[in-house]
Amino acid sequence: MTWLNKNRNPLITALIILIALVLAFSGKSPQTTSSIILSGVTLAALYFLVASGVSLIFGLMDVLNFAHGSLFMFGAYAGWTFYTNPRLLFNTAPILLAVLAGLALSPILARFVALPRWARWLAVLFGIAMAIFALRDFPIDKLVAMGMSMTGKIIPTAEAQEPIATMLLRIGGMFIAGAVASAATATRSAERLEAPMSRTLGIVGGLVALALITLFVRDLGEQAILGTESNWRFLLALGVGAGTGAALGALMEWGLIRPLYARPIYQILLTLGLTFVFDQVVRFVWGPAGAFMEIPQWFNTSSQDCPSDNLLLWFSQHCDSIFVMGRPFPSYRLFIILVGAIMVLGIALLLQRTRFGMIIRAGVQDSEMVEALGINVRRVFTLVFAIGAGLAGLGGVVAAPFLGVYPGMAMEFLLQAFIVVVIGGLGSIPGAVVGALLVGLARAYGDHIVLAGIQLPWMTDAISGSPAIARASTVLIMAIVLFLKPTGIFGKKE
Image (cartoon, rainbow, N blue to C red; front, side, top):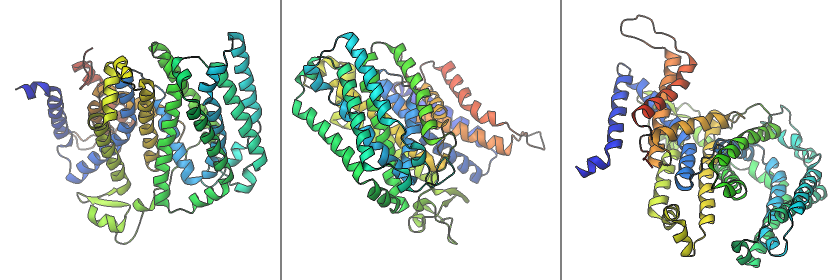
């Protein structure tokens, strides 16, 4: 009886979902039913990769990140760029690393620099001016124009990228800009004064060395990446997308959100503003048009033996589709489902079965006690933010061969992610799983109605559906859930 009371909400939810599925799919063939369900689970896996980060960050840090969809978008563009146009990364990464190296000087500058307020503003203005001077006439449009580019033209690498000497000047200017910004924001906190200087110098030196290495191997690196088999290049692109999302998330938490933990309204305004900023950055760098990322060869083989009759045969044939209930289903969509399932298991193990997960949960409950044990809670929270952002970046790359990359994908997936977390309950990972499944299945069923129409028993002809039905179905489910349980399925009253 105790077990039933404890798991009442999940059991009631499962029963309602089961009844809804039976009613929705009654009268449909097994082939149609399996196709709709698999399509819905595919969308659910993508929604979960975004919503899980939102739920993780809010549940552990009480931060509602409205820029999370932009991290999904940046991950997609970073992975797509690595896969199709690595020269853009090799020519911009050294500049970004130089800025980070300058910013990393902050603990050292805090020991020796204590600028008055007016001098801080002058330093900020000087840093901005130095960054503008270092980036003037940077050939971003030429670097983008390669292969499947947004500009519709192809420019050879030798013509697109600048000489080493010019790039070194840009790197030096951006390092100075970052260092000036560090001086303008340096504070004499106990944490920074006690930080070992050797560690800080090691971080700065490592970033500078990495920037120079990336610059000097840019031609060799581009050729090596483009010459790599598409399957392995895709796996590397997954890592690049996840790393980009994690890096942006960590920088956002460290530089922008950390000072605003006590001001939740300011957090919302800041992250909402960042959404529009990131959208314009994407349009400026890659253009307003969209593009599709090539499906890797593992999931894109066409032959007389395809589609594969079952999953075991697929491992030897690598067909672009597999027969499921007598109907071919794209094998790449099954891969998306697999990634979503792996992420669900990984997050559960991280939070429940690892020492790091224990530290996270303890830090949320009593951060002062955890700090008394010698654990840097701020650093742990930054890492949590990076993990959530990395999941979004990974989801962006996974979605790129399926949905493509385009500037509006940030707002689209952000809206779906918030619907998912509201349905499941803010801060609940199991809720994010259930919410993603409900939203994904509702969207797939709505798409089916749009294509096939609604066949009522007393009508001979099906009623054609509007595309708005698919979009409205998810909002309708959210409204029903909130009417029955305002905190969401797994939400708890505070």
